[in-house]
Image (cartoon, helix red, strand yellow):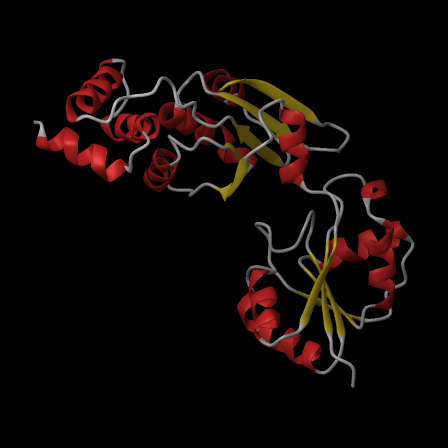
Length: 279
């Protein structure tokens, strides 16, 4: 029997008309479709005018670990398995990574049907630098863990893209304003490509205040990277003075050390040691 193929199929993040033509082709010829939500998948197939002849099984966060071996068996038996999630590209903050890793480990062919991406769409319309960026997915739900994650990103120079649940958006933006700076440029992209699409641009503090009344829909947040600021000399006195100046302006020491490390072109641990040895 011929070797199986795993197809990661990108699905529309909003309008069905955005679906790539090859999506319908792959769904029609699949031996097995693994869908994050089988009911939503059936609606998508109907909207695309596709008659799905293969088997359809659920593949979501709750059963991903248990179902992956079964899907790998199908692939090893020579079947063409198409993986779809509710919106966007499988495995990008969606189910899929475990299956891809397992398929790659066994030498199974993995390919993709490229489709709409909330990450790239939000980045493109944000108005923020796009030459270098990083995707941070969802922030931790707990306030302490979220604060620590954001503190680690305080000196990140690349534009950052986050996903967030609507009911946590206000808290996330407030935490970003505190950790990254109230005047850090950002954009909140809501319901991208859908009927009620909305792009809000401004400083993090402004966006946090706007979100306090509540937001709805799918949310993607784009935040400008940290600016290096003026160069800082690498001698101990200059490093300590630069950190102290930032602390006087209200920045937490950990974040001040991270920024000065970027400005001086040094590892954070070296600046940390210089600052604390000098006390």
